[in-house]
Image 1 (cartoon, rainbow, N blue to C red):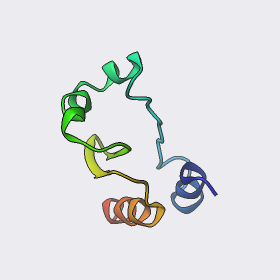
Image 2: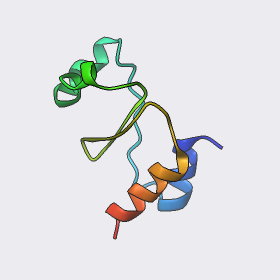
Image 3: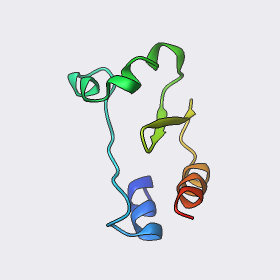
Image 4: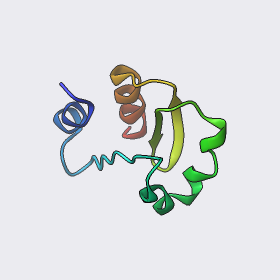
Length: 72
C-alpha cells in the first residue's frame, strides 16, 4: 500500500493533503521555504505542515506516527 493511500485511509480524505514534489523540477519554486534547505538534506525529504521532518528515506510508520501526533 502506498503512503498516500495509507494516510487517507487512516486519517480521512478531509484531513490529509498529500503532495509529491519532484525537487529537480520548477514545481519546487512553489515551496521557497523548502527550496532553501535542499542543499543540506538527503533526499527524499518528508515535509509535514510546511516543516521538514524526515530525510534520507520514507518510513510509513514514522510519517504516520508524526501525523497522528499532530492531530491530537
